[in-house]
Image 1 (tube, rainbow, N blue to C red):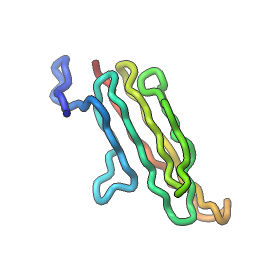
Image 2: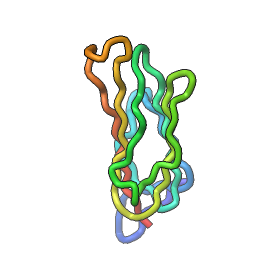
Image 3: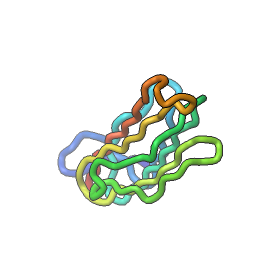
Image 4: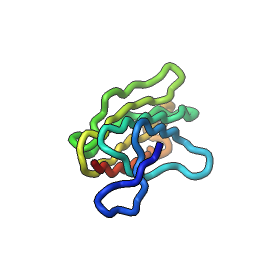
Length: 116
């Protein structure tokens, strides 16, 4: 259940478990605000002839990865936890598997702001 952030912020911050699936239908989530202790579950759906790289965190002290693995169907699944106040970007890129010199990689970013 979403709860409002404290400290005078008008932004709505989430708590509990947040699930993000990419590619989303029309409006992919690119940024979110969560409370400390929130779990973020990411699924990067498989794409034809492409493979997702491991998910990384730009600030593991704020948002640390707990699990990251490639599923048998080619989807990448990752679980992260909001550990302390701050901002982190979770990032992955896909690569074209038939030819490493083929189409360029496409990056997927999720910027997470963590509040108490």
